[in-house]
Length: 101
Image 1 (cartoon, rainbow, N blue to C red):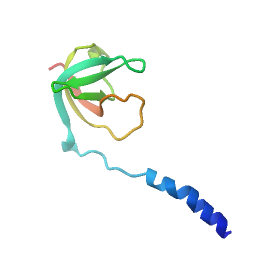
Image 2: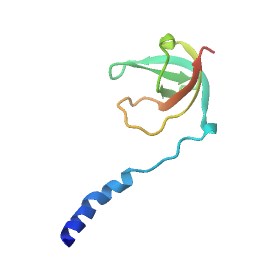
Image 3: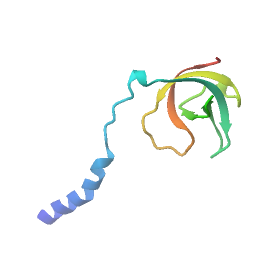
């Protein structure tokens, strides 16, 4: 019985560090900027946001009415929780407010 227990520990112990509870971003950690919508022709194409300083943001959603390459927008967002994704472009954000400037 003891070898099975040791084997169980050796197989499960490496995975215990993979699950960390991270608190959500505080409300004062908001990001607000004026920028533009950009179409990124990678991986089938998607829309992202670019601010005046050239920083890239990958939003969770952009309303259909604003999905035009070059569309100027005013954005209030917060950092998205860490996730795995295939779009390796920009910082992931969750949109709280988006509209024309």
